[in-house]
Length: 609
Ligand code: M6R
Image (cartoon, rainbow, N blue to C red; front, side, top):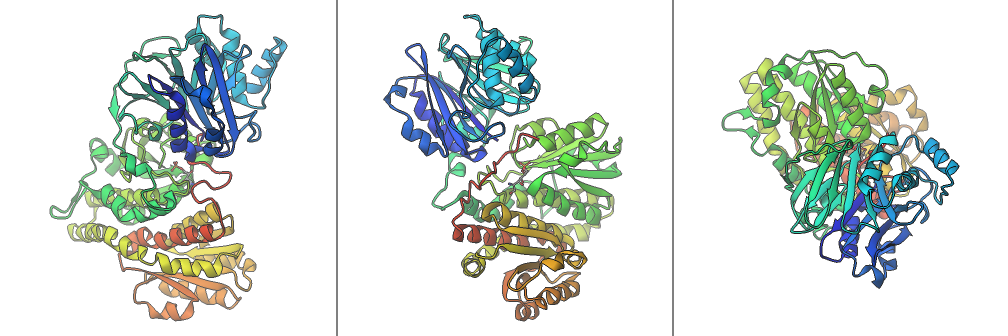
């Protein structure tokens, strides 16, 4: 949520900042701005909307500066206007600040500053912090002024600050919002995530909460907010540039849907060993005993990751026979959950930065639970705050609508459930069957993807419909939820996902002629039941779409449209059945003219509660 980039070196800062903003645009995209230091003064430009609008306004005066900061915004306080866009300035106009996060006590700080005669232009919490830094600044103490201001602040921040009096440095600090320093050759890039950095260097340091970096052309220092020096390890980012580029696809979402055969393979690589009949998960190896002995698992997550957690709940109970619950992170943390030594809290998150998930994890660990993470972004806060964990290794996910992260999360949960199951009571033969089925999934996803053209033709018929139902049972109930989320977040149609049987308890009242009802109706244990549910909505005029198992002619005859998935074992079906639903959402959104990778009102990484 919001993207920050700062550059100091010998190259033209504005070019690198604008490129960095484009890479970070998926984090927020309602307005953007940048500030550089030129001839001893700050020069600022801002624009509403996409980075391209800002780029058009950046004139030659930006050309010679070699230090600057920039920001792409997802509005929290105040509408997306130029005035509210970052950077914000202190009262003297010498200090510029970009900020990601929320200053919770901004109203009282603003009142205090106004009483001192400080005026404000914007409605933002960020401007309050900029003015507060200026309030403490006496002309030669920028670092001290930033520390003093941050000590007054409640809330979360990732910030980058420049000052016209000290054009040789950027000051960066974080609490709750990610911040990375990329280390190049006599150049440094501060950014909210690695996508703005990897074009220039793959060497980075990750700031931790309560840390600050003072970055110059010659190097950087890291300290705590109390000015105690901190030594940081330089780490290597594994992402490749091509992973964050479109590579011939029209949208990142489509690219990432099509990457899934490979991303699921990557997720299993070096972990599932068919020949030896083992699953090796290095990230949890030291905790294998505690995990096997746990008497309860709690998965906590938001959005798509929560849906993956629901699949995980079924997998864990089925394969590992461990009582498991899946909790919305935002609810879990505030309801005083009962947790003890034998409970394992498992935070699932693509970004590893989702504020609610992080808070739930912290709450549970404070209460004595062992915390593990299922995270995609290496080095992210959740990854660093867990006792152990398993990375997805599906590569960077840029599209706001999560796709390959979901299949990666389910794959990790399947491996983890089978791993624990085998250590408890799963027989070698059943375990081997399971991993053989898992091994076939990437090739099977490839087969499902071949139907993209057919799915597009169905989308053409249905794209105008405003209300959709998604229905599934058992392992495919979370898939129904995820299918509905996909279509609503990128197509802006109303969609509800639910267990197919629940429909009769109220939602069936919504069904009218032509309403698309999408069933996940594979040939599995609840097949007959779902056939009945299909009849129920057909009788009320719904247009029926079904995801079925290859070769099932019976449902094919009954439904208006069908997409097929190859036969797999029931616990792994979500890895296949979600694919047509991702494609359906994608094609409907394209046909409705929606902005696929940057859906309205959304941002990729939700770092505010
Ligand atoms: O980064 P996370 O996995 O923690 O994000 C959680 C949700 O915000 C995310 O899955 C969201 O629901 C997606 N936009 C759904 O496509």
